[in-house]
Amino acid sequence: MVKEHTLDVETDLYCLIGNPVSHSLSPLMHNYAFRKLGLNAVYLAFKVYEDMLQKAVEGLKAFNIKGANVTIPYKTSVIKYLDAIEEDAEKIGAVNTIKNLGGVLSGYNTDWTAAVDLLKERVNNLKGLNALIIGAGGVARAIVYGLIKNGVNVTITDRTVENAEKMVNDLKKQFEESIECGVILLKDVKKEILRFNILINATPIGMTPNINETPVNTEYLPSNIIVFDTVYNPFETLLVKKAKRIGCTVIEGYRMLVKQGALAFKIWTGLAPPVEDMEKIVYSKLKGELVE
Ligand code: NAP
Image (cartoon, rainbow, N blue to C red; front, side, top):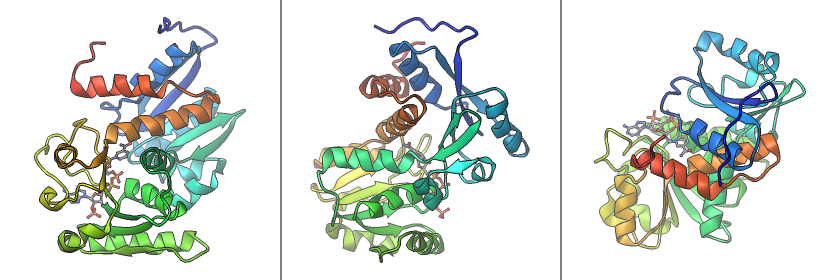
């Protein structure tokens, strides 16, 4: 039973900071979780222009906003305005969650924990597995960090080889011990695919409106590889559809979206949110079934 949302002088405010934010599903899932747990709290999305970012972050303190998510394009640039940053987020160089505790703003990154948690739900022990990540942008960096931290041997491929190499070099500096992390060319994926246990799409390839695209040719995907697509719109990308048909274990992007949100919710409130219900509501919205 989901309770009515009552807003009054006691209501705690949480928000999203980014640009654009109009497509965001975070208000939907967080407000659902607040209602379900009977918390007097509300979550709003704020479109913030770059020259207003500092003021927006200071506004979290001024208005006693209890917590925030940060999305594109501010996950890195927001860091300089925070009072503290959790070690993993600092090493990744990106923050997607801010907690305001008595006017002290601390930054966290729940993208990497979300990705690792989802993989661990499918494989007990990640140590020693081989993963191929396509993409060398922000989400790839968080996921690769999490994989390395869990003993996965990581290979990165990107349309811009220099970006992949730069990411590997940056990450190598963040780990004291030597790490297994290399780069291959996109054209070599076909001949190397059989040595990977996990394939992750960390590019926008396959995202609406380009729903007929896949980041790799799916014809040569083996059925024993785990396919993880970070793209969540559509809820089932062509890569995910084809991988399911082949019989691969699949992790859809909307699950990561919900998981990173759920982990942020836990950081803010200390409470475990209703993850399965949040997944259902986000899935329905993406499928166009949800009537609000
Ligand atoms: P980003 O920092 O802009 O990085 C994008 C990466 O994709 C770069 O490596 C870029 O290559 C590559 N790329 C972009 N367009 C491409 C194309 N047409 N063909 C081949 N490669 C292309 O973006 P991001 O923040 O990492 O996000 C990437 C995607 O992850 C998003 O589009 C979103 O769908 C997904 N995402 C999902 C979640 C979730 O919770 N499920 C969270 C964050 C992001 P270059 O190096 O050449 O620029």
